[in-house]
Image (tube, rainbow, N blue to C red; front, side, top):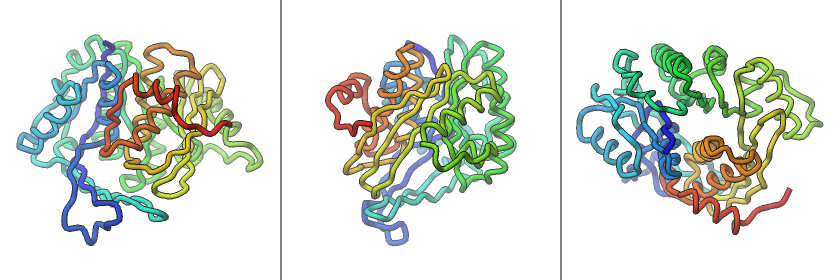
Length: 336
């Protein structure tokens, strides 16, 4: 098994029933989720050794999270315990032309108090192949930016590859704040998940002509990104067309060796839960890169994994490699 270190916060998720708004809800469904934890769970389902590094309160809710992760084969050996709060978010599930909405309640959580001194870097990175973090984590505080950068530096000094998903959240920080931090972190990164709008609004890349196709724009943007940060080896993103809250079209992209690889276009009908779809795609790309598959195979696998996530309730993608491969053989697709 390949050891992958994942660093971030896991939250309690409280969801409405479809068709019910948060303001009217009398009952909410509890799940656990968070971008990094979702990636760790997907990778564990694919057979990797996923080590989740975080901090939880030492009470019943923290224990509930620990049991949840262990039940999905994610290692909790590097989780610290302390503080009093488990961060939460509230999900109003969309329907028809009304999209889903999220309300965060995560200030002063146990994770937000985590310091570099609490992390045993030797144990965390022992035999590790990859470290994965998202832009949500440094968005939590200026102190957390320092923790992430320190982890990146430690990983680099040990020859551990670094994967970073921009995952910009406007409710957590401004575009300017995010762009400043991402430019600071990019020199450490080997694998980057970012799309066209991220590069325009966070990294201040110029808008390209509207006449160009999305694929040609991505190709030019990724080429510029790799020129600006030669350490980058692979870039990825998805393009989503929202038909309604229950119907989307999804395409995946992987940029490698100055070539943009594209998946088929999937029509996702009757979405059960869209949350975590991007994390499932990232996990699929990482899985393929670790296994050294052909790049067109990798992007096809990752996109299919993301499509399957839309059929699974909760944040995590509870599917195996075999199930994704089966979908690639028998799934419904829209040809390019």
